[in-house]
Structures are given as C-alpha cells and as structure tokens.
Length: 245
Image: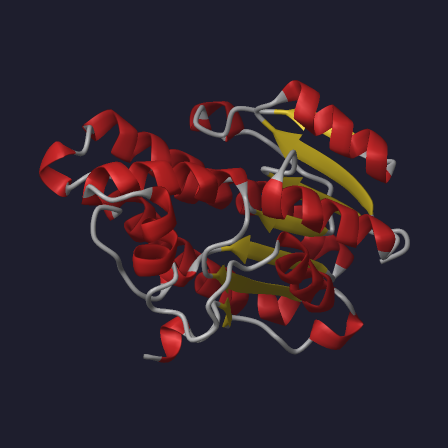
C-alpha cells in the first residue's frame, strides 16, 4: 500500500480505527473521517495520517465533493432499535443518509481519481444485516441492503477501469455501537444485557463470541492489497456462521 491514499469513514473508533491502523501499517496514508473531531485527530496522529471532521448526515454538503483517494472504506454507521410503528421518521432518514446516501456520494467523489489512475479499491463495511434481517432494525437493515446493491453496481461499473468494490459483513463486533445495542435490545425485549448477548446478539451464530475489530480490519487489508485484485462485487461474511442458516 506504499504510496496509496486511503479514506476511512467512522475512523475514530471501533472497526474504523482498526481499519485505519491496518492500512497505515501496510504503508497507506490514511485520512480518518469522523464526526468526532477529537477522536479523528487522535487516530490520525497515531497512524501518521490526516483527520477530516465531517457530519455524513449532512449529505447535501457532499454533493460537489472530489476525493483524491485510492482506497475508500465506507464504515460510518449508527443504530436505532425500535419496532416499525414506533420508529421516528427523522431517525430512519438520518440512518439512511449516513449509511447509504453518504457512501454513494463518497464513491461518486472518489471514482474520477480512481479511473484516472486505473486503480482503486472501495470497501463497504456492511453487516450480516446486509444479508439477513432482524426485528426492530428497519432502518439499519434496509440501509445495509441498499449498500450491498450500491457496492455491486460500483463493481460492475468500475471493474473495466481497474476499480474493485466489495462488502465486508461482520456479525456483532466488539464496538461502542454494539455496547449501545445491548442496552437498547434489553429495553426492547425486557431482559438484562447479559441475556441479550447470549439469547439475542449471539443466538444465530455458530461461533459464540463477538467479532474483534482487528479481525475485520485484517480482511479489509487483504481485500485492498495485491491478492484481492480479482475480488469484486462480493460480500464477505465475518459472522461466525450466522448467514449460513
């Protein structure tokens, strides 16, 4: 990855910060994009990269963006757990803005540079919920399913011009987002957080543990490296066997 420039959204924590470290260790210059200024700067300083403070919910601000990056990792995301009839419309729109509209706009901004270079890598951090559904997550599941389609179209359009596009589909990862889900799911199901982990979050997995951020980052590193050149349009599950059912 020496000489390559990478952009990682949601890079201040969780999967994003692990990916930033992985790509930097492989030689890339990484821009850490996040709504948290302090978090983005901390990770950027650690990996010798740059920080970009950006609110991806404000999608109109991205309409005329141009990105001179070789690797784009769309990772930023939020979660909200409610039954459909109780789901606030504005929250549904916000989740789709951050997790589907913003990735489209960032891909749109990055492709001209990638096409000019004849080389580019787009990695969309989707989820097992991009492949299957769970109750109470209408916005998250539909946004991730949309991201899967966007990734495939990007792969088809970009392939002849040296650009690959893939999805990475983790199960529940040990991140602040999942920790918040424990509390939300406990409230939704009326049980304790320990029971949520065992009976809800890990119920569908054959491997009964959370995914570690570094495991996802390692796969992203391989997919963006020389050995991943023929991998495009696919979805790579890191879900402990969840989607095998």
